[in-house]
Length: 347
Image (cartoon, rainbow, N blue to C red; front, side):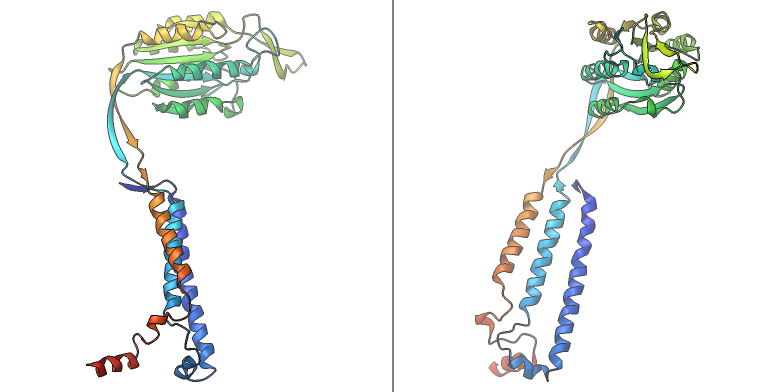
């Protein structure tokens, strides 16, 4: 299997025929100018060292080198293989609260680490522990959005986690029921695959129905674990105030978070607890891992050195090919009547 890492660079190969056409036009212009001085055969005798063939050789070498360098830029690779792998794991959908209240401090101190940043740190560490599991990401506020379908590419999953902000959801608020439903729809249809939803939120639910939706998930064999962020005492939400100008206080609704976890046959952990991550990992480990197949690709061997060598050889030969006649070929006029007559006379 032969492919290119950057195939768009191959469009530069269009320069080769362009330069060839320019070369042909330049040679035609040169011949036209020479004809102004007299008959071509007479003018040619006045330039005994001018070669008719070496310019064509030089342009051929130059275009070969150019083509090789363009292919080098595209990074040719050969030998890539498709491999079918069988792994055992579970499916985990993360429902991540990106409502404005997640910008508030996760502690009682207004200048403490934000709930959003603490959530990112927790989930990055959790993703590193998922091993062969699959992970997906749903973000929500007043509405929900599938940010990342189920994947075993944890590097991409962590990249998405680092980019989460409240601005990604236009309609603010907190609708946990909608997030749970979208996460449920994000799982594979395989019935033998064990599934879990990790709901990470401050549980300030503005829409209701989260507990009923969690029960529905449990009835369908989906475990719901909840990570609560913030404190029950609450803290100021920076940059926000009521229409009357009163500062907004946002609190962790720990009671609701615990009820959702209970309805979803999961556990509740407080994000500020030192054991939050280990408790959650222990709960996920209780789910039986199921086998699933995945396709992976091994990268092909880089062919860059081969084309670099070809380009180097072409440029090296071009240096030694001069525009005047080569001494040992001066007596030969290829493809002319004179050369044909000489050959016939020799016979």
